[in-house]
Image (cartoon, rainbow, N blue to C red; front, side, top):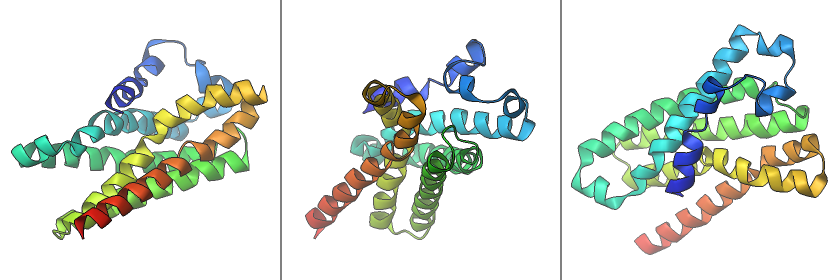
Length: 195
């Protein structure tokens, strides 16, 4: 998990080092690519989403959490800020997703779910509700990890359907719904073990 999180977390660097028509941006219209608000949303989403992905997995290390709570809190604050801004930006650019309404809905629901789970995780730890905080952080990072699962599923779906748009509509849902399901069963297991 850490390996993929680091590789994909650093992935946004590509958008700053090569031609802007790389990858998904090649499917966007020149008008959209020149839109200032869309560009702010896009870069806020990929850069801060990359930061959240890069550091989020560290929070699941009990060694760091127990031995150095200050580090845990510091990393947690950076993760929450990055995730909240990236999810809001993701919701915004979701309206312009390649693949139309079905793809847009998939990415917008992903953004809303990530925003909600991260916000609740933050609010519960502020109230000292540690168990609830841990559960919501599992959901939050499972949704953040959709950046990885999207890049695993997309080439497979393109090979299966021989059509990028069809693959992209499916991956708009497949990149996060199974992650959320895994997080649900992880939380169920932890809750059972605690009681």
